[in-house]
Length: 574
Image 1: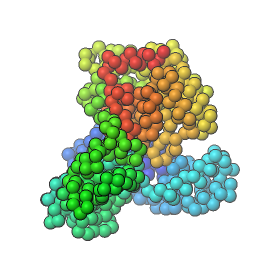
Image 2: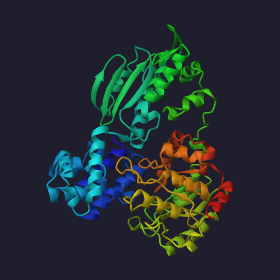
Image 3: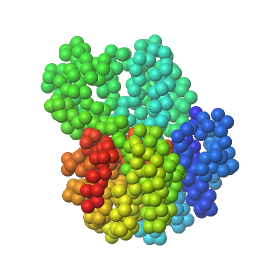
Image 4: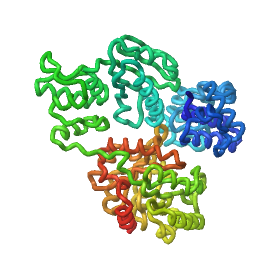
């Protein structure tokens, strides 16, 4: 089945190619909005079509877009995209995939310098020709060279949020095969790294199981790279490479542990085993020639005198010592969340109204949801001015009269201006339950100016939470230059909070920064940044990141019940 993410990718490519050709901006925007809608849609468009649903009932989907969705579902592409691909050289399309180079910049590079390839782009940057173009400059030229170097070094990596649906579908398929006892993803995916390269799968099955053959013949497989008695490698239609290893059930835990841990974690574990006169590998834990553990991961760690270490922590960052000494954190889980403190409605750039967002949050069992639409300076998101925000507050108060077990909190995602001022006056912000400050522009300020900007904003009255603190977008936009240690120290001093934005393309804060904040006693809000009801699912990725950051429930702001949360929010706002 063609999934929504694949259809969205087609629409995003169409939008990029249209913008590259300087097409009508309204047409470009329609494709981008449709792609965003599809990524956040709760149901698969292919399933809706199979059930006879009319896709034109979806917001922003007219007759032409609905027909193109049907094309992609049936064929994996649409004639409109194929025509655009034929009209744009392949090498030029490749430049669009380079982080930091959108269609407008690629168009300028092509028109002004005749560039069509990455190698040509690299030579032009080295010769200092790019800095002379309007809108580029020396800094942008340097960033292009850095992006080219990263792309060459890293190869293709996929955001974990994009890989997750494919991996889960494949695991469901494998678990249903004859003779399969257990099947799990390993590697960086199981450790919940922000991006993944190849996907490693480990299956416990007897030798006579047809799981290898069934895996290679799965409908989503585009190419079989290798196939043997105990392993196979394939490339999926999305381009994701997946390697499957079939192991004997008696060694399943050892194999899962071996293929999950980072290289550094596994080296440290083997070193620890040798000190105890043991050997550990993918087949088990051995004392001499006798296997003493391996059927489960717990047995592997127990044989080494360790508590079981959650996969997210297996990076050789102190987890082995903590496991030996009984100091592993009781990691936060999705079930611990009592609410969400960052969500948008159709009043700014969301896709649903107040009531629809509230009911979606209630269905998830939440006690509260903060409505934080954008403020006026973010015009591209139809940000709220004072009048519209005050009208929204009145609407929230009316809705809150309906519920005894749920509350909408009054908030705003206010722009942090380049001088550190907030985008709305204090007298308006003072009427809110929380103020989420955010940077959406001025990403190229120096480290000193960017840090000063954020610290000034955090000192403003009513400031509550710093949203997506580093401003990164995976894999396209690097974090801003920022003294994050100073920001964490300011949050600790002020008693305000930092956000872990759970959108799969943000996952911002990173895991290391979460650990620093935890050590400083700064609570983290794990927020969805939902722009529609389906986006609350982002919280799963946010919790994964929080776990990688060693966060426990007490470290996460929105694990608190409403009665404990509100006094903290009031205290943070001075």
